[in-house]
Image (spheres, rainbow, N blue to C red):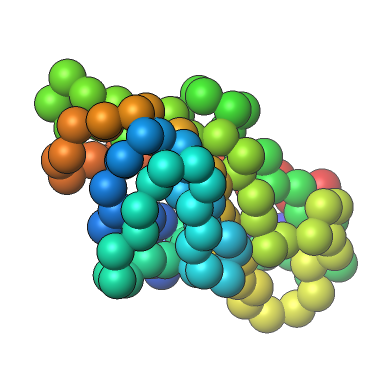
Length: 130
């Protein structure tokens, strides 16, 4: 069995925004972001989470992402839940030879008048080789 290696190449970043009357910031797997509701986006860098992996040739790979609301970004006592995680990795994709890359996006739920801050967090993605 060949070694399986996974490494993170970019962290997820939603960029700068103001809560306004609340809504959501959605980060696509290509790093593009959009808003809904009263959220106001400011010009700033945003990025989808990115990782690379390798493993056995011709093995099916399954990526399991967190459930809605299972992960939150936190700043002190304030938090914002993440929902609708998405991935660029095809469901049940076959791992051919070499290193593969995948990106992960999600939707950040922003409450009305959400307190400003530097919100951080982490999520777990499980990559299964079959």
